[in-house]
Length: 90
Image (tube, rainbow, N blue to C red; front, side, top):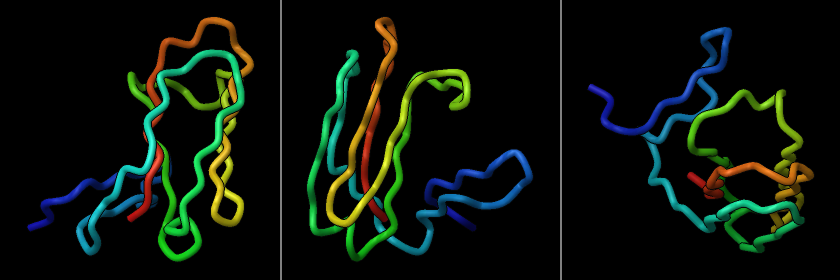
């Protein structure tokens, strides 16, 4: 029986499954309008992810999270966006 975190998209595809690997949270952003980055060598060798809380519809906000090489960039252009973003690997 699975014990880890599993996240599925709107089509039922599993997009995150921590049952086979350990999850590592590398950064937490309490969000304000800005660009923030976090760098870790783990982004190069493991599967990257981000979680936003409280839940929201990703296409309704001006939030962009990108992973390029060993750097994660979080961009927010809304003035009022009271969310917390967790960035990690598994």
